[in-house]
Length: 334
Image (cartoon, rainbow, N blue to C red):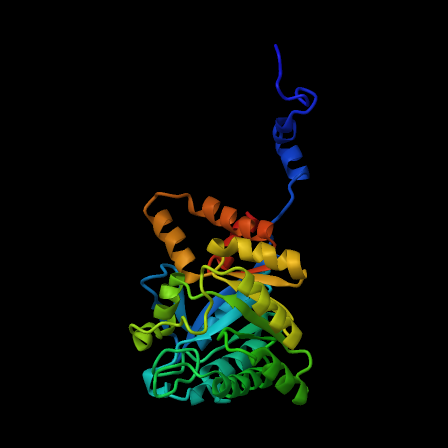
C-alpha cells in the first residue's frame, strides 16, 4: 500500500476523535451558563403574559411575572438579563420623553429587579424606538431624517435615568455618532463610575430584526421606513472596526456585534483586532428560524441551538444574548 500523505500513518487525525474522553480533552471551545444573557420583554399591568406570534415560546411579561422569572433565571446560573420595554401608544411621542421618565416602565422594573434579585445583572437598552411615534431610534427632522446630536441629548438623559434606577449596564443600541462619549461623561459627572457601557458598535441594518419589532410594538410605527442612515450596511466589514475603535476610545467597556450568526466574521475580526470583551446578539429572526424549523420537525432544536451558540464562542464571543438562554441553561444541567 502506498500513501501520498507523507505524515500518514504516523499521523492519524481521527485517533483523537475515536473516544469521547479524548474528544473532550482536545475540545477548543466550550459553552457554559456564564456565557448567556437572556433578553426579556416587560409590559405594563399585573399578571399579564402575552405571547409573541413570531417568537413562539417568548412572552411579554408584566413586572410581577418578570420578577418571578428573574428568580428562576438567577437560580439557573444565568449572569444577566437584557430588558426591553413594551410602551403603550399613549406614552409614545415624537420626542420620546417617556424614555427618561424616572417612573417609566424600565426605570420601575430596574428598581424592582435590583431589590428582588440584587445579584442578577441588569442590562438596559438605550434607544428611542420603543418610545417614538415614528419607530425610529432617534429624533427626526421635518424631512424624516434621524438627527444625530439632538438624539444624543435624549439618549444621555435616558442612560442616566437607567443608572439612577440601578442598572448595572446601559447598552446604547441606537448607532448615533458620539453617543458613547456623551453617556460616559454624564455617568462620570453623576458619580455612576461603575456603570458599565455595552456599546452596540457594529449593529447592522438587518432584516433579521422583524420579530423583535413585533415584540416591542415598534414595527407598526416604523411602517415602510428603514434605518439605513444610521445602522450599518451588511456589505461592510472594515467599517465595523472603525465604529468599535471609536466607541472604545469614547469609553465603552464592552462591544456588541448584532446580528450574530450571519456576522461571525465580524466577531472574529473584532476579537482579533482589539481583544476586548465582545458580545453577540442571536437576534429574534435567528431565534424564529431555529424555532420554526424545530417545531416542524426539520431540525433537532437542542442540537442546532447548542451548535449555533458554540459557533459564537469559536468566533470569539465572550457573551451571547439569546432567547434560548433559559433553555440552554436547563440543557446544560442535564
